[in-house]
Image (cartoon, rainbow, N blue to C red; front, top):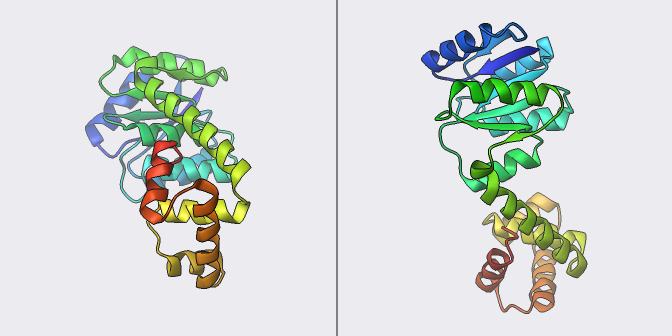
Length: 210
């Protein structure tokens, strides 16, 4: 198994390399200290598995996963994190991460995770990802409900509102007139039974859409 490891702490990086080099079936082909270097290493070596720290300079773990997902690289990813919240876990799972290991766990857990992921399996500690998976399911259900009620363009406007964008910013992002944004929002308010932006955001939160 050919592995790239990425972490911005030199001591952690050295410890990971030392741990994995003791395993006869694992070869560390490169160690990286930031996200940009990590992407270059994966592109160059095409490793079987990438061990990826969540917090890194230049491009964090999620940014690396987004790029890999967009490029459809075959390298499988294992996320290594000291602390991770549910939203980050949801995003990582959505981007196709195959394993998640907390740094507080015993080293052998990481080794076992790598072997399972290399075999094409997922390796998630249930107590770590349980709440995140529940949130992912709720969001998927909410997205399905929204797609039945709203048009594709209306959903784009709603997502922009959820990100805190104002009407002019939404218009610029979607390439439409600001007046058209207002018309879409009026239709959304009517369909969802809300009377304004604040009520819309509250409903989106209630439905786990955001």
